[in-house]
Length: 168
Image (cartoon, rainbow, N blue to C red; front, side, top):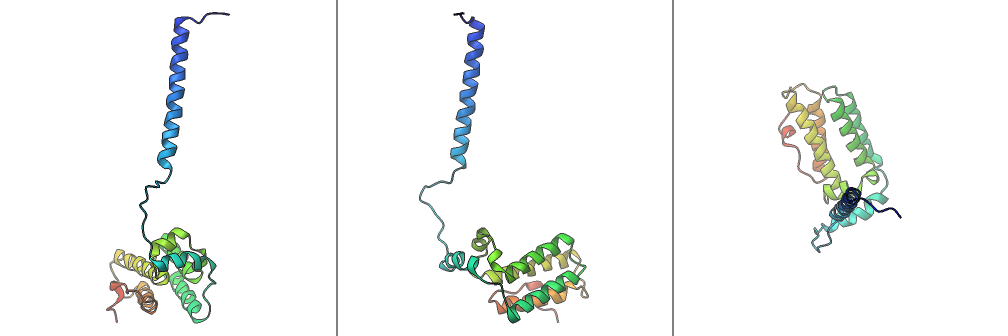
């Protein structure tokens, strides 16, 4: 059997140490990526817990509620004041109001106890932001949309968007 030269031994030792370092780094990275089980957890509102079970099983809106949301979607589609990205966000959220079962669990948790009101408030906020970016023209198609969203927010038990509250 051939004896390894001191240079070859050093190279082999360096390669082994590098491999051990890489393996140790991978193991530590995977452990850091795993969720902590320290016993601390966030308490969820019982309504949110109930929503996590009931919303994925829910049926889409129907009747007057569905008609109101479809009509809002048509208003949004017809309003050129929205940027294409903002319009798309609006239509996605309107679809989530119509069909809440399509809502991801993270969104259900994030929106809290009154999902419909919170989604509508997000729609109103997005419309208000666009209107402010456009320097709040009184004749903007965003104004009747914002006012209509506020009516829907109040009906859902939420707080209307201030920007559209006092507009005649």
